[in-house]
Image (cartoon, rainbow, N blue to C red):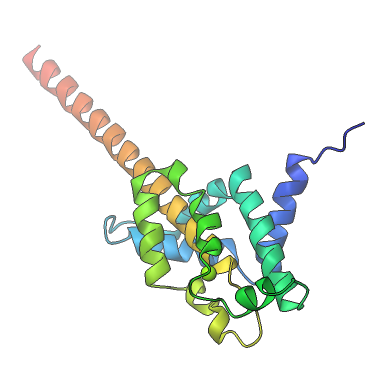
Length: 187
Ligand code: MG
């Protein structure tokens, strides 16, 4: 019989890897908050956390985490073949496969995800900055920093669209209450 991987196991493994590598859902939600709070002054951490959790439900993201973090860990242990070992261990600037892997999942979340990912790639903020391989003392996070940027970018975009939907629904309710009030007065 063909061996089959269960979705539950994939999700568990991906979340465990993030945790083992020192990244929490709250860390990523913190970035989402920073990215979206200028547009939504009332924003709290709660919807940011919920959005990160929703993004982490996607199998595509889970698979990217499995691949990227595996390579980081193997490079940290010196177990990759050369020249890949040195490229990943030193976070070689022109490598680009770390960004490409992470970028794969941002297209599904629309243009806000794509532009936020680009911004985070340039301006490393929060946990992304802490994960910088070049300054993290022997730890290799060449892939993980981009994966975190991608999750944060996706969660930001997802939340921006949801907040707009909620706002419009609230406006519609408000309008219908006003219309009801007006027709009662007229009647
Ligand atoms: Mg990187």
